[in-house]
Amino acid sequence: MIRSRTSRLAAAALSRRQWTCPACLSKRQYSKQPEKREPPDHRKLGNQQELFMTSVYSPGSPIFLPNGARIFNRLVDFLRKQYVRYGFQEVITPTIYKKSLWAKSGHLENYAEDMYSVTGNKRALDLERTTGCCGTDHAKNEAAVEEDDDYGLKPMNCPGHCLIFASKLHSYRDLPVRYADFSPLHRNEISGALSGLTRVRRFHQDDGHIFCRPSQVEGEIKKTLDFVKTVYSVLRLGVSYRLALSTRPKDHYIGTEEEWARAEDSLKRALDASGMEWTINEGDGAFYGPKIDIVLKDSEGKEHQTATIQLDFQLPKRFELEYQAPAPEYEARGETTDDPELLANYGPVRPVMIHRAVLGSVERLLALLIENYDGKWPFWLNPRQAIILTVNTSDPVVEWADEVRNILLGNKKLQADGLPSLESLSGQTGLAVDMDTTARPLGTKIREAHASGYGLVLVVGEQDAKNQQVSLGKERLSPLETRDRMLRMVDTFE
Ligand SMILES: [Zn+2]
Image (cartoon, rainbow, N blue to C red):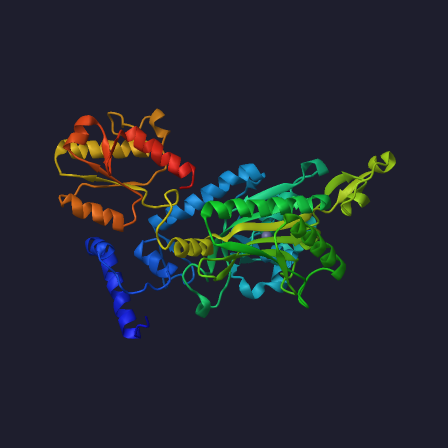
């Protein structure tokens, strides 16, 4: 059915009004809707569910509201737990770096237009001499640092992670070294291109960098593809995804053609070994190396580029990264030898760097999730996991509802002075549980709770208070049974 623009606008206005009044919305939920729905729009749903907002004072930088922040943090916590399994170590790194760092990394030359500049106050060179060590030759860089009072807001974490790798000596036995980072990143998108969570100036990545031996590249890429598969199946995201290898751009790239060819061959071998179908995007690589893009197809057939795996022979060279290995010439080619004489000879070898992000931009992934779930969150991500409704406002009922909430949250009783004891600080469940003790008809409260997207709607009445239980539909459960069920749903990503 084709609707006129006026009727579409009227429908949109109506739906906006209904969300501001949950009671009306609940009626809409239960009324018949003959009209076909428009495809979900994350900006509209984000507004309706109070997930995020934007401000003219910081265009392109989403402001996450409490509900949005809950989802954001759950996604990040989920990734953090997987990092233990996949051998990543999380680091926390600066937002601004001196321009001399961006000159060293090649960003100033190749990426300056997309970066924000920050100007600092002039600082004495002495201060620089006495502050921490980045692992590189200070004396050599002093001249550059002295004149450098300009900073760049980081658009990527890679140079920071190179500084960490360079800060200590490495043996081949230490590799691979894998760093993960959730830092905010800034890229100077033109204002006309800004939109919701998909085209932004400030965003976060589930960013990671792997420093490995040349012989480990294929294994690391296979592991990363496995990581992607695990995460996407948990998120129940997309009907399918495809892999695309982007090769050397025609011009505007760092390094030699031979280095690019070697990098591309490594990726092709790992792609072949993955058993998945892959295609080539000729000339679409970043200026510093070839990459594998994971392109997700949603239920409407739209494609979204999310995860990226990028091989990089350039940054390790620019940052003079190295590790010690026996038979260094063989090691550098990713080969092994049994010759004891060659093995007795240790020397420096340049590691290969792999940039990788599984979610990609957390903001863009969130936009995809909002639209994919159409606002109906799975329990583990739901910012509204449960609500306790009271049948009336009598003291025993309200007090019992409050106690149930504390049990579900894992809050323990306060001390006589009103402060928590040390022992009571542990045991919080991290569940999101709200309460509605208003003096309104129960039917209204139930409809409103369902319409607001609560995962579980728990009811507490006189009988429940007496029997120390809660009602979940027709079931009667103890608060501890309810809590265990909720935690199980979180653990199994229901
Ligand atoms: Zn990177």
